[in-house]
Length: 66
View 1 (tube, one colour):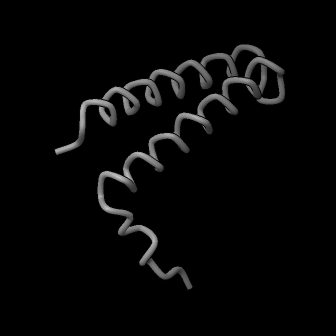
View 2: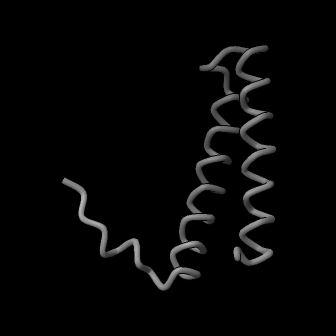
């Protein structure tokens, strides 16, 4: 089961993604507000990945991508 912090981050990611899509549709994909939200979403995704890796014991380091 995912830790509450991961679930909380997951919800933040979902909300940020929805917000970014709405702003992108209204203001355009290259508008500064859309780009800011995209960076914020990237930050949340990075945090999620780091915490998920710690939660899973860093098994993702053993994955080979060809």
